[in-house]
Each structure stands twice: as C-alpha cells, then as structure tokens.
Image (cartoon, rainbow, N blue to C red; front, side, top):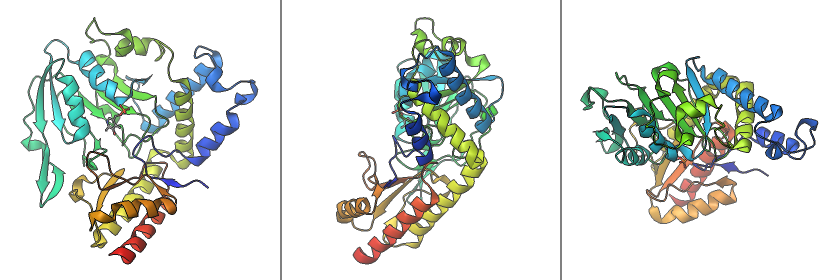
Length: 359
Ligand SMILES: *Cc1c(COP(=O)(O)O)cnc(C)c1O
C-alpha cells in the first residue's frame, strides 16, 4: 500500500501521476522507448516540454510578458543566479530575512553585491511572526527586493505579497501552486520542483521580460536567464524526466480544477491540522496565526522524550517523514498539494490517539 508521506522534500507525488508514468515507462505513447531515452531536441520531447509550460501558464495565469524557464541546480543555485543576473549597475538589493532559506539566499547574494538585510522576523506573545511592512528599512535604489514566501523549515509564511517599488523576487519553492497568486506583482518567481511540483532536479524560474538581459557578462551561459530563454531552457540537456513528470503533475492539477480548487483543499487540510493542534494541550505550533504556513506545519509534543516513540508509531500507521528539520527538531508535517485531505485526517486521528495514550 502507499503510505501518507509528509516529507518536506523531495515530497509526495499524486498516485495517479506515478501510475501514468509507470504505464508509460517502457514504451512512451507507442514509440517503443522511454521518454528518458529520447533526445531533448526530438519533436516528441519538445512537444511534451512545451505542453508542460503551457499548462503551468494556464494554472498560474502567467502573463505573456513573462518567460518560464525549466532549469537545474535547485533553488539553491538561484540564490547565486539571481544576484548575478539582476544586480545590474548599482549592485544593490534588499533581502528580507525571515528564516533559514531567506538567510541562505542572502548569504550567497552578499558575495556579489551590496545587500541590505531587512530583519523581518519577530516574536509575538512567544510565537514567531513576520513584522509589518511599514517597519522595514527598504532602500530606495535596490535593483530588486528578495524574500521567501514560505519558510519551509520554520513553517512561517507571508500573509500577503509585499508592496515594493523595486522588482520583487521570491522563492516559492515550498508554496508554488498551493494558492492563487498574481504573477504580475513579481519580477521573478523561482521554485525547486521537489516540494510542490515534481521530482528533484528541476527548478522553475518565471521571469519578466525586461529582467532577462542584465546578467554580468562573465557568468556561465547556463546561468544567464536571457540565454536560457532564447534557447527554450535547452542551453544544455535539461532534466528531461523531471520536466516530463512535472508536466503530468500540471495535467493532474488541471483535472483537479486548477489552483483555486487545490487551494480550497489546502485550506481545509491546514484548518484541520492547526485546529486539532490548537485544541490539544499535548501538541504545540510555534507560529503566530497570521503567519502560519499552509504547507509546512511544525509542532512539538508536550514531552520531548516521546518524539522517537511518536515517529515510530506514526510509521507503523503508514504516516511517514514527520520528523522536523535536523536544525530545529520537533515534528513537521508537510501537507503539499499531493497530500490528500484523508492523509491529514489520518494524521490527526493518529495524533489524537497518541496523545490519549501518552498524555
Ligand atoms: C527546499 C528549499 C530550498 C532549496 O531547494 P534546493 O532545490 O534543494 O536547492 C530553497 N528555498 C526553499 C524555500 C525551500 O523550501
């Protein structure tokens, strides 16, 4: 049987998508070979790649003046690619710091330019929160403003898109496609695929046309957004299988009714899990309500000594990968698009039973 997988990444994929991939594995659409064995320049593969892009454009309602790139190197390579492409002549950018991922991004950026760090994390009544935008020390001549929509490790998410004058650049690795988004508010959106899209190895970059050709001339062609855009993300061999499989996920999402429909389910899932945690004296979530992540739900047990037992029993109940990130400990349930409401219900039932037996 397939278990419910709460892994933060690489994460759960829809069973229907894996079944389709399995069915096509040896003989893709009667062509006598696997899609993995196909040239990325073949008409068949290019059609698959273009269909994936078209479906993502539909799902996210991406305006025509944006390019969609299917790159490699993970979100982490974008931590460098973004400053190398976008810092431009004034070489200044604002980075909003809310947790571990936004910190990794700003540390890379500091190697290339004059980075103004906006500390936006705070504690409200002992709970982690993001400060009001009116308190941020944004600069007036930044080439761009960077933030991470959802801090996957902390479980801290922006309640709204910040309003800034410079182009807005956002790491959506763990929240892309989870809720409706107005792409036109951004200069650049990026996301590693392995959380809410597809397998590891693929990174999506959605970039406004006017930002394409500002790269420092000496950087590798593979890292230049303009070069990748001109070459259909095929400056070199792309991650063909991950791209194909992500395309199947986009088709699956469209069949579910698109982002609006999955958003409703995601809201129900989050409400169920946070609601249960809040109703319990045994479990605690450390995030202020307004900034709770819809995708990654960290929680602690009343007694830390029970963590190992909790994880072991959860696994016996086919509830996998609930340990928190190694840097913070505790528990974390990642409830991405591919985790169904029934999975969250099974988790809540287990948590309740565990608390009754051990509380
Ligand atoms: C997972 C994650 C990353 C790192 O992604 P890689 O693809 O492993 O480089 C960056 N940012 C956020 C918000 C993440 O969740």
